[in-house]
Image (tube, rainbow, N blue to C red; front, side):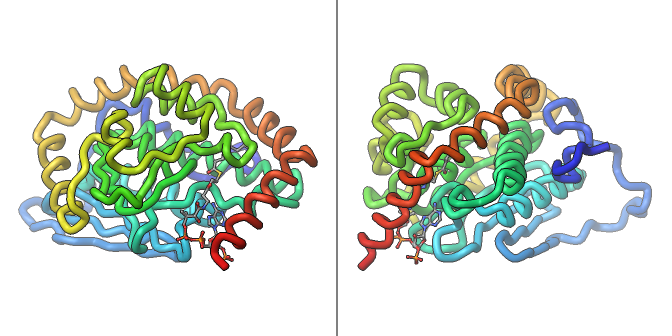
Length: 300
Ligand code: CO8
């Protein structure tokens, strides 16, 4: 049973504890071809599953900037869980349906002037998104087709492979320090596991947003391609990863990621308490409000 306030899907067996997919549905008559493409769309995320290749495309479509609101995060976790439980799905490509933005990170308005109950629910949803994505049994590829600060960067970092559009105007990084806030330990762990300790330490302390070419140099993304080739490349990378037997790849992924996942699972409630006590401070609220005002001023 789920404790109160926990998304319903976390009652299931965690993805990172499962070594293999569930058996085929007895409802599928033998010999009948599978439907080639299934799609489901909710308000903020569109998902299309090509059952012949086993690859799903998840497109963020929450204008203006795909900020990670409570609603977005909940849809994301539920969509990922649906794919995870679908035997026909072996890999997912995540990208944005909006021009120039992959995701602007956590929705700052969710962290400003809200109740303790709201902060609790919001932070649990942020944790859930990461646990699901970082711990996914599927192959996950981020096709980063725009800027991707903070929580948006975390989503890309949580995938198995990152391809970014070759556009120096697009940047990516964990810029929390620039907002006067601190990336939690599991953001940091995920970052360290991708770029190494030294690069992560410098980048986190400076709250750097790295233009695409620099992100490639640092290993924050795996490759850059011209924007028009991004999806084609993502599909090719996915095919390469899916050519391996699932069980070997999944167990290897678990071996690499389990300790980091377990750390948050073991300290989940403490992490929520820390977030609430941090975000409730008047000085932090002031920093967040000033940052939002700066975004608005920059626009006008
Ligand atoms: N949350 C809420 N609203 C946002 C966010 C956001 N993250 N980002 C942008 N917006 C809003 C803007 O305020 C603006 O609103 P309005 O139209 O009402 O004026 C609208 O979205 C469009 O924004 P821009 O005009 O700035 O759009 P651009 O296309 O020019 O630029 C960018 C897009 C590059 C994404 C730019 O908006 C930007 O830099 N945004 C801020 C991104 C950012 O710094 N995010 C960090 C969030 S914090 C986080 O993810 C992790 C925190 C974890 C630690 C927590 C401990 C407390």
